[in-house]
Image (cartoon, rainbow, N blue to C red; front, side):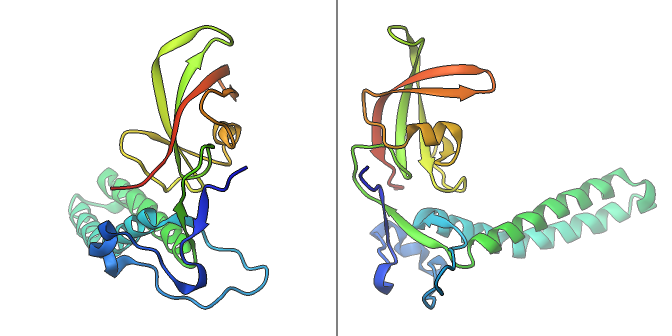
Length: 202
């Protein structure tokens, strides 16, 4: 199976396209080599890394400031023991802090990967599927998915499926014209791969 990914930080050289130059403040810092057996904290494209760094810094700055203001305002509604607004704000604060911890973990020491050309579906591939009824039946509406190593990867207007998910794993190594059977909670579905291309954020 042709590899769809290469390490973009190999030998200490980070590959950055011109579109990412404006985001230099969010690029991964240089890190020492990992010890034998040490795994990366995540495997991300540069686009996802930069977006996640921006999200993290926004949550730790504006996010926390606005949440503190909301909690202060909620206290003014009365006793916090019977204060629905305060309870809701505390719940959202907990979710925000959990997201901050998750982002900090993933961004601690990730592998930065780059998508390369391939005629096979792999991580970093936009794949368009056509639902069929087995042999001849065809559904008029095609569905496009981004197959990715991490659910943090994004492509506008399409769903992300990880390569470890049932659908994602079934698609790995497939080419245009191949049929894939996918076991879902709603039943068994057969798709035909009608298009696949590497995802390159603009």
